[in-house]
Image 1 (tube, rainbow, N blue to C red):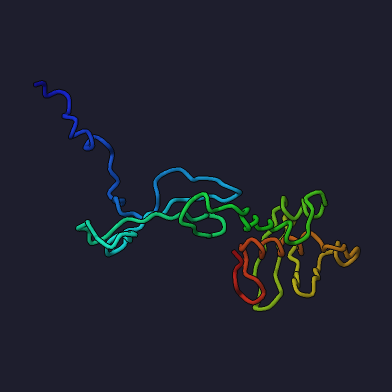
Image 2: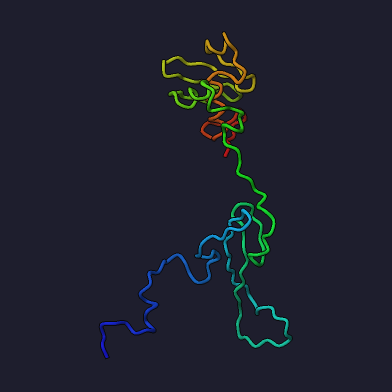
Length: 186
């Protein structure tokens, strides 16, 4: 018998092992199944006791058994069988910060608010923020009163605000600076 090939029963030792996983992990290592807009993952759980059976006699010696169910990553719904996800997934993608603020990327002020170097600082507790522009000027923005001390806002008073007001609003929505109450958005 040659010793340069592993025995068939030892072939499982050749597979790479991950020290953080075991055969009793809850997450299924397989691919994600997609059905009716759902992103389904199989979940394996080991439960104590014996597996439920329609028969009155128990022929197992087990003190625990494995069960599997399916969970949608998007909406969190759970079903016993994958084909039970018959309705479309009801968890739409959340709007972007631009969509939530009602801004259009085609608006020149919005483009400047996104592209120019503007530093937003949470000035004091409340709705006042300081925005330092690339020119070195610092403007005070009141996000609740929707006002800014820049010349564009004072002279023209644009409908959706100047670039400084838009930038503060976008940074609050994306969680880069705190909201007026001191909390961060996610």
